[in-house]
Length: 320
Image 1: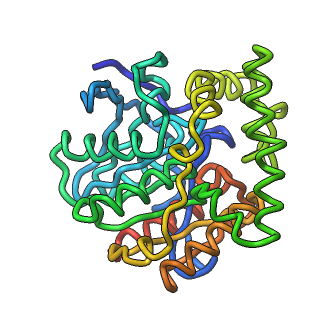
Image 2 (image 1 turned 45 degrees about the vertical axis):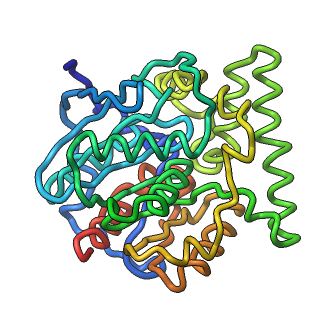
């Protein structure tokens, strides 16, 4: 085991890298004093072997397990503002997905896909001997958590989904189709083109600003924050090269409607419009599940407004 500090991440607006927030009914969740983002403390970094790879994670607290699942450009550090606040009531586990720091950033013979990361999460839950867990997930991590819930509902006690990028759904309406083409051209293809030019910094900047730039533009971030994002160059390159059908499969609304675990959908007030459209479709498929909008927050909502986020999600978890 090695030591890992999360203190710096708890102070930065990007600490969520691509995270989530929520609780209660549409935008009305109080943030109790106990839920405010506490000063992060030193944690021990653990390693678990899952499906041929080592996954690093941190753990704090006791009780019913809550597993945090980060998004693209994120790591287990993304949950710095949450770990201590949630550990007062739950057993908190925050892990870094395959290819994400501090895990190995090297080829392993696998194709980057939603299924790969879902199977890894299932493997982690089983390897740690967890039974039914709360999954609190952000962006692509929310996409992963959703697939895990569809495949292994027996493992999931409840589900918090913050803006999963189910981009194929955008093509169902003219407005959504326009948003999809704009994102593909100005963010995804732009990042891929930057990698082709060997401009890794430009690729990360394009991708980050396309998702979280409304509240935390890349050029305005402190040097240390940009350096942390640039640790994700390897995994982002894999994402831009992935087969779209495997990377972002079009999950069926009828299957999602069959989920029996309680679900909380979370949206950042200032997130890109495409995430609002996708979450609205998710709400329709899930038939009136709980929703919340995090005031003043963008896609990295668990850092943009950590106090509201923590109170809202804790409120949801404690009743489920």
